[in-house]
Amino acid sequence: MNAPTSPASPRPDFAQVPDLAPFRARRERLLARMQAAGGGVAVLPTAPERIRNRDAHYLYRHDSYFYYLTAFREPEAVVVLVAGEQPQQILFCREKNEEREIWDGYRYGPDAACEVFGFDEAWTIGDLEKRLPDYLADQPLVWASLGYDSAWDATVLDALNSVRGKARSGIVPPHSIRDLRAELDEMRLVKDAAELATMRHAAQISAAAHCRAMRATRPGRFEYEIEAELLHAFRSAGSQAPAYTSIVAGGANACVLHYIDNDHLLRDGDLLLIDAGCELDGYASDITRTFPVNGRFSTAQREVYETVLAAQHAAREATRPGAHWNAPHEAAVKVLAQGMIDLGLLQGSLDGVIESNAYSRFYMHRTGHWLGMDVHDAGEYKLGGEWRPLAEGMVLTIEPGCYIRPADDVPEHLWNIGIRIEDDAVVTADGCELITADAPKTVADIEALMREARDG
Ligand SMILES: [Mn+2]
Image 1 (cartoon, helix red, strand yellow):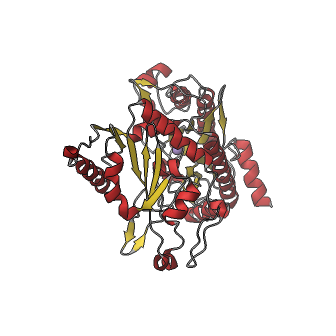
Image 2: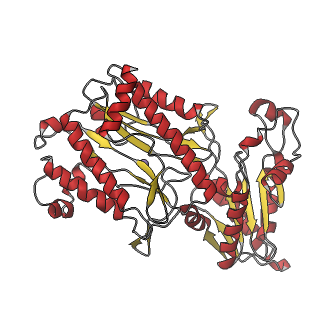
Image 3: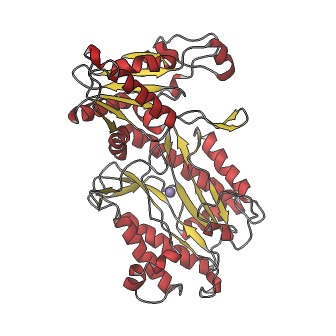
């Protein structure tokens, strides 16, 4: 590649540009889907930069849909894909600007971006408003995602109106707007080989981070110290950022499902629940482990833990091609509900506590979600009113839990026990593979790892 380089700042390592073949293949597949649905033009922007406070920005994160099709990570970019007899792939991006590059670093500019990322044409983002109507002229459909960003909605509608304004010169404007996200959601649901490779790598980094956190945990440390161990493991392995804010919840904090303060002291005799995963090259991982701060489960903690672990096993067994989306959840609920009866948390029959939803007092979330570029990834869970069947290449989490808040009718020895066990599963030809299995989760494996860390 002979991309022009700026004297102002070096071009990024080639390693930062991934293998582009899968991205091209996705653009081709989208164009084929559009063509089959009537043709037209797809327009898709990346995410805007966001101010955190005053003139400090949040760490920039590209839009997942945009990255999926382009591999391009700079802000201020739009991709235009024209279906039909002569398909066209066009990128709009920031222009070269040596002054800005001194402050903010390298930017490709249209010429280099066009060549490196494999587009037919590329233009500066400032040309978008001027050029977009030309791409829409005489096209039957516009494929766009509206309603998420009013500035983008206005850009698309202004372009459409501009084409409508030329009707008297014989130009035919698009007659309708289709939902681009719906099309991409279906594509994103089944991961290709490149995506699975990245997700496996992300999962391994996160599993290693959970091991590091277990080794570092002991009474007297603070939750944020353990969070720092996770962040160290993520970043030092090349992950760009956590995929979501890490939950490091000791003792009663584990019963707050989205606890992220992470500022409490870890006490002898408490459990520590960690829900944390890294993002690697645009893909999320999502692991939860729960373990004793002092390295040894108490009898009560172990009883609840084994119930959640058995529920996870049942959900995993129910995760295979052809099974419907809700099957793993139903399997987990069955085991958890029976466990709650056996523990004395609930009274009545198994069928009774499931039908009445009584179990949801202690298990109030679902057993999983799609996982991919977004931690709660794109994709419908139902099709035509029915839970959709699982298929090879889909990726989901399996994360049953049990959260016991103090109450008069709850046995006191179980108070403040909060447990979740979460792995990332790839649906395979005949079942599923847990790609986060390197993080220990049996009582014996967790206690062995923590003993080893303590005794050196
Ligand atoms: Mn999750």
